[in-house]
Image 1 (cartoon, rainbow, N blue to C red):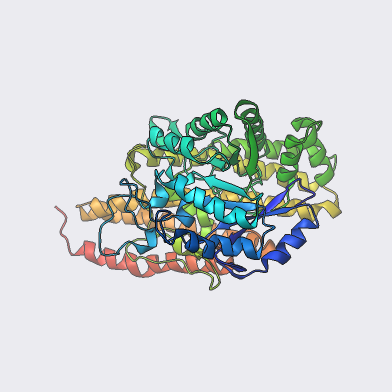
Image 2 (tube, rainbow, N blue to C red):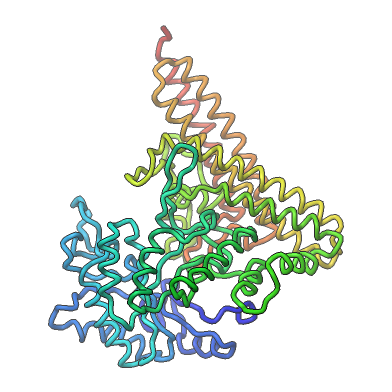
Length: 530
């Protein structure tokens, strides 16, 4: 990591030496990181059940945040994001209760405090800052406004103007932007390389940070990953990453951007993309084009370089046709080809026993998310399919170019090259799955609404043919994940698309074909055609 130019790591913290995945010796982690010049930040999962106005608030926060920084005062700082460490705000726009403490039998008509720019966040930040800096005077207190970028601008900026001067503001770079695709509007969800950024949400808060002189960071994802394809080591789209790097450097000039969160849940993996990021941030470096050419020669040899550059160019064009939707990023693009095709019987993906959330928060019963900031799902679905078909075409052309390049790559370089080709193919299979899922949704909707049994039977035939194509797609993915265990895995929540999960999905789709479809055909036969 140090060699790649990174200067800090982050650990999810629930208590002293306690993370969502179990025990971690925090001081030992800090010592090991320091050997390589790396700082360590706390990403807070600490519970805040007490309002800063409460009489016992200082004692309470000393027993939580104070306890952690007393035990490990050499933490560089703490990252605070609403959904992970909300408190019982008194802001009337919220429920006033923590999300997990809201009664399950009561409808929630207001957002939880972690999803709103609450007017009393400055109080909470002040008591946390005082508590933490008692034990670590130079601690970097980072406040991330991720969860409420959808709220009215005046409410967001009122909060940014009110937070204490010694707090660092962290704003996600490209999120919440409304984007026009053909004749429909989409909302840019977290996180994506398809939209270079910065978005209006970032821009508006960065301007206020500049006015106030606040230290400004952004969630940039430039470690090489985003949620575009959730179970890959990095996204091999160099031209688009270069555009993101250039946009970030412009924000440094315009608004004093001084820090990057380059990754969080999906970790970091060394690749030529992270080497491009290092080049972009270091003054006196070679140009992007020259660096890319040198990386291709180093990793594939001179004979293969032209084809490798063509492959990378095609892949870079592919990501520009990706449309980031919430239902896809919590659905087929979160796990790729292990995502099921549900007909009537609901299923939940199996999760690893040690997973923090695992595949449990993957929404398997696919349904376009309705949101007043974007066009209706039924209007968007065909646009998304057409765009993803263009993405798939570009991915496949890039894969063909890289496959040709490997034929003239020296033997000692070929293993790493084949791993990169496997990554490109895995992404292509994930795109194909997402297209199939959208087509499945359309056909299933048509079948369920068709009153004529003959017409319904024809639609069922189309569904059966589509299921067969998706089974073949999943089967073709198995050799890829068996050849490279890093494919089909996400490192903090353990989303899985290994061979076992792919076989589970294949069996699930076959059960639809073998059980549910025959049952539906019997039901159709009981209705007389007119």
